[in-house]
Image (cartoon, rainbow, N blue to C red; front, side):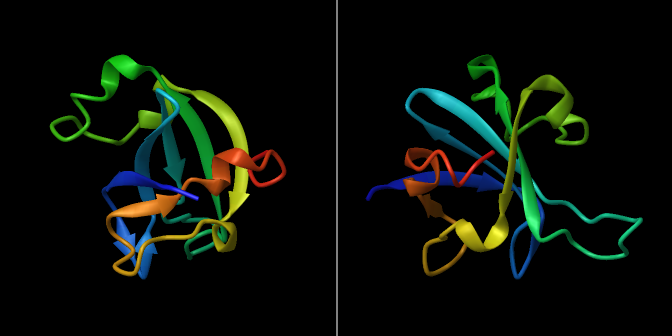
Length: 102
């Protein structure tokens, strides 16, 4: 198992929105606050983003970022394993097991 570095924007106990690169592909995990639930969801919506965005992510707004990508599926937050700080990386097994995302 390896680690995939993340860049995140929202943090409440864990990153609520983050981007990571794996196998030369860019992924957006979106779990931002849901007004209708009045809470954070217990899953991420996962999108594959165009690689052309990788160098612009730190300087661009993330609102609407999902609209720039291709929807892949949902993954329960409990299946995403973060590093000890919960701010630097995730285990890449989330991508290796097809049952985890979808």
